[in-house]
Figure (cartoon, rainbow, N blue to C red):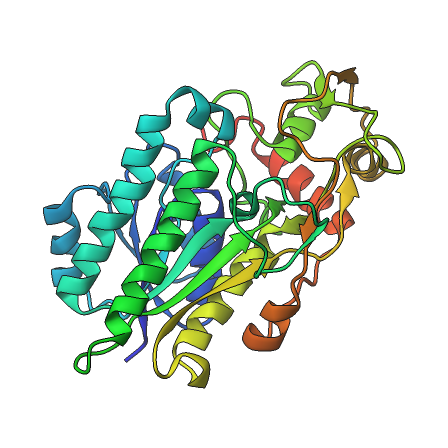
Length: 348
């Protein structure tokens, strides 16, 4: 029987791409999503792309009984946990909403998993757990120090998972927890088919969908926050990773949890990034070159807390998960534009 993976938040941007890769790799997929930040249309399109069915439950992970019901009905062997709120600005305005949704929601999920004796988890973490580190290239052993409520929810969940794994290791009976913490850098792009992509509610928080919406005429102008950083062109440099490369890392993590590396359990963090950075102006010029469209932008003041430059050291993921990025910045831009042109109003 094929392994069955529960994907929380599976109708969202990254979750939907993960479902495609899992189905194509031969896994059975069960999606749990409350559809607060996602659209059910994405699930139909996952099945169109793969030609394979998936099971869907409209459930909030904070609802213990509804979630337990899903585990009772489906033969789940592992969980990839994407469900969570993810806008940094909003988390600063509504921190309690973020702690309740992200941290409490994960606590409920873990309790239900333990009750069902499903102890394999891939957690969608974030490079924001590193905070304002003095290093430019981030390795997994750097001290953590998230500086906003969103990042702190990810760091708290990581702590919770490490504690859970450590407590389990003290027991002599039962199966151990096997947990991979995947720290993302900046996911962009869309599926090559143009059928699924990033469809933010309202004004996008992230750079790439904003650039695409300016290029297609949906938004008037992009604000570039700061052009006086100590970088080659003065704009901030970030590590951008194609969403398809990113989710392939999750499939590799599921394989690793079933392998020798996690045979006796454990909880381990891995960076998922390209290992090099691109500046904001580089993104804009690549977008203009590939699409032939002008991207109107203005230089705005720096935002508080923004760093000049940081990117991943992804060597541990290469060594232990056999994962590395394959797609280029040009691929990310071309796939974003393909999605935007085919879906000018997103999934609507």
